[in-house]
Image: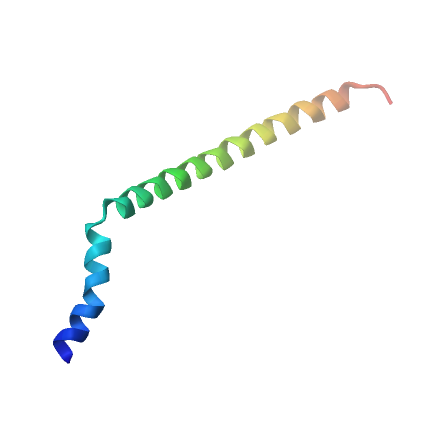
Length: 63
């Protein structure tokens, strides 16, 4: 019974490791995470620059 149970439990794991779609999915997930992190960084930088330009314009306007 132990041999059958071991085979029953390890067969799906071996099939998953042999399937290349799982590797591709993890590669795409890593690329997506890097793109999201880069986008957040760029948007934050642009937002700060835009805020400083907006404040300069607002300060130059007469009240």
